[in-house]
Image (cartoon, rainbow, N blue to C red):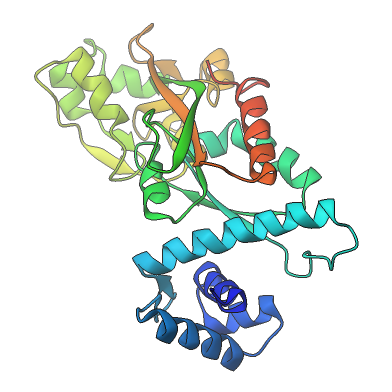
Length: 299
């Protein structure tokens, strides 16, 4: 039988990144947290936390953290059915999820707000490229994720959310300066592009559709959807933008499409741990509702 006080200590250390902050959230001393974690590691005969700044979980530690989160969610549901039981809200639950940055900048916040407004759960949102959020599910780092992967991660269910439509756009002045004679391999190889991070392949994929032999464009690295759009409006470079995020700029003419009618659609899926408690299912319902309604709804 696992020691759940020790499991909660492990989850708090990994979530907060240090023994001191974990102790504050658990309302105990750092020494108590250390002793609980040490006893759990000795009993299992394996290291669960890599001590550092911040502290991080080993592979075994990540799986135990996920188990602890599931147990805490189940305890919350049990508490709702048995109101005479002691409240489990003294330590508010935290659920870790992963979302791609463009979803977070457009349609996902209403989903979080709707969920948080009806539950006592706190959300710990990790941001990653949509092609890589599934890795966090696979590693046990999160319980649910918005991902571009349709195939369910082992132990998870996958449901289609819709598609995010991207367009290649830049300021009119930038287009005039760099694409006056058209958008082709030579002009793309000279014009600075905007790239979110080293995992972002959208610009490369769009260029390959226009130029099958491939083009290597100069790159500015800019890991912020809002700053990405503002930099394009300022004439810094061209990039692939969620159409809903720059709809007003397109209407006003501060941004224009490089090649009209050449959008790229990225299908998105919601994956979450199979057999999730009802509380996590409520999050899924809020996610589906937000993805399908509002000004930033997915296609």
